[in-house]
Length: 370
Ligand code: OSB
Ligand code: MG
Image (cartoon, rainbow, N blue to C red; front, side, top):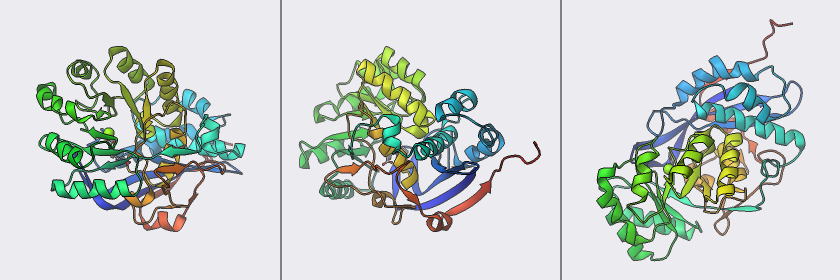
């Protein structure tokens, strides 16, 4: 196992209700077979505990101290087996587990000589792209962003909202673009006391409002759902299949954003997807400003049949001047092509990885056990 802690400058700072990020941090995980293939995954934990409690430095420590020993040197037939026997038993730390699970799936798909999409049951040749636009200092700047990304072909616009940057901003966008697919993401900025403000969004025909209330809540969302018309989509609150089942049973949301980083990887994402498909809950794939490695995993998941809304999957250029993979991710007519090469379908540029390196470690099979 090799770990690469990266810090990469974003093309522009990304502001949400929980803060501003100018640089993105992540950990890349590379798993190599004793003699054979390799696989890559991405730990999407960022520098601070603002989206969730997880942080790059903490997840690094957890992987080195606990998870690496469960993976390095062990033998298993498929990623699900390792997940069920050795990884799922670690409580929490989904982002760390996700990085490993993704690398295992890439490795497994490469060994099968098939694309990750095909191996996990993907059915689409291209996936629908949406863009997530951060909070700006002036509404005019956001209107320019909206214009620019519509021109690039994005099939849905999502804007970040918070108290004081919500109803008026949506009204202004709708004034200029009366019929584009539009949604908002609050990243847990409101409480039930704000129901009057949230209700003012009702007339604007939003596809959904993402995570209006606190980050691990299900119950208050179920109450809010009865009081607003805009469909609620949960992001932060859905950290596992179990949470997805509860959200469905409690009617906390009408839509789920599946983020592999947040739920522990491809294995758990697929379980949530399958459940939602069975009960008729629409889903889409969320992002965490991933590098080209994490993005590949998002694209594979977005090719699953239950993904019916555009995902937060944008071109490499929306995030980084130069991505660390080849080919870079690009969009055509608002869609991204699902690679059909084996594994995740992109090559990792080691020179580019090195340029952003904060920390590196190699964990080898113990040589003391004979
Ligand atoms: O809530 O969806 C979110 C980015 C970082 C943390 C949380 C979120 C986001 C995004 C960006 O909205 C989505 C993307 O990767 O394009
Ligand atoms: Mg979100």
